[in-house]
Length: 170
Length: 118
View 1 (cartoon, rainbow over the protein chains, first blue to last red):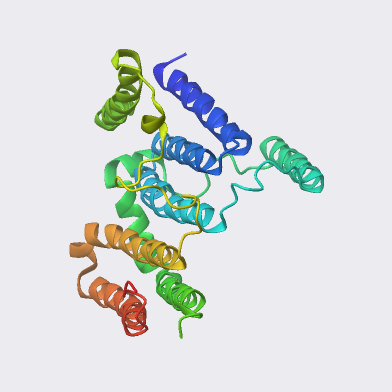
View 2: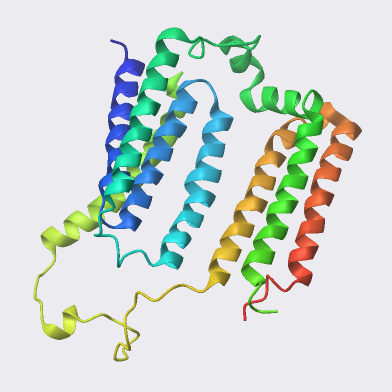
């Protein structure tokens, strides 16, 4: 076993343990912090897959911004009070969803071709040209329209957030 | 390949060690004398009034939401900044349109008073 396989195994252990802690922690804030650790593990996977830009975005957007939103949601909902209640139907639904997801993942891994790299970009190209450059080149030429539409999507989200949060004051 | 990430890994390890070290060593080395006053919740020297688990005002959520949206805008600027010289005027117009559309959103937020802290 070479060093990167050992490293991969180590990161996977941390990812699985932290993901388990997200669902088992009693305090929702502890769950949120465990989720940050899971996001960092995912970023490490992106870095190991020769995708440093994705790793940086994973940390900036998910571990940074989205986690702030989740923590604020926990504070807003004040769910500490009914955290000890157990919803049996929720557990049942969650189990069904989990089993279906597990079966689907198994099906994809054994039958599908998702795990193989698709398209013309190889690791050598990424190492030579740079991952961010390759993404940018495709995004600003081939996917020009989706990129511009993203700004409208963000605009809609900005307007929606302001309308929802400011409704009571006016 | 992993060698290029060694500085980042070192940074993460040092910050982890600092965070864990401060907690572990202060509990190992520090004195442990508990009294009723010491264990009481600290609130700027005043007597605590009511529970600290109040619901947070929605304005915090609004700021967090707007932070995410403009954070995503900033993420799109990175690949553009790297390719700035190669894309030239075409890229400038493209990114200009993107930023102007979001600037409209920024002006909307500003005029609606969502950035005011009342």
